[in-house]
Image 1 (tube, rainbow, N blue to C red):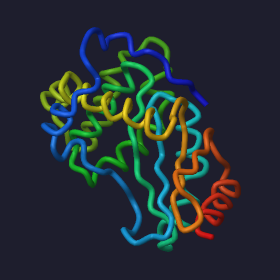
Image 2 (image 1 turned 135 degrees about the vertical axis):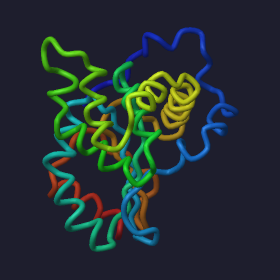
Image 3 (image 1 turned 180 degrees about the vertical axis):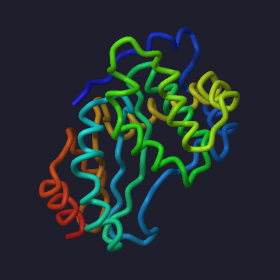
Image 4 (image 1 turned 120 degrees about the vertical axis):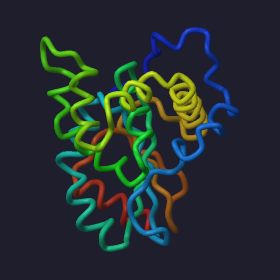
Length: 204
């Protein structure tokens, strides 16, 4: 798990700015995969620079998708929970893409996290742009998204609200809802058997 820490460049901007969040419209809309009527809904709170989040995406999520999401048992709802400025910029870029490209983009970033986050001697933003370009984003659109302060403030406002509502303080964290669970919080990257068991418990 990675614990939440202060974002250095937030400065004096208020992160409790619902007007800004509303102004972002579709960019702040729900990003999810799975059937709307799935009996269990899991909210995933993640930071794109969190290695534990990347491990879950690479090692557990493929089985979750195949066995639980594609079979209609589970709906996953994604919540950006950036823990540093690079993660915040990446989240802003992801949110600017068309909604259907959000999850594939996030998955690609997690799969190659070492290349754009932790490799030595790189320009992180230039490396991030390579993935955005593959998702169909021009450099001009990328720079605009990565520097969209209103969108970043709205993402932080939602993060703050999630912290207060669900008690999120680390990534990854999963919140399970189903016939036998209400806002059941589980922190840390989970193996597939562990995650599947939690889904089964929530389903009742």
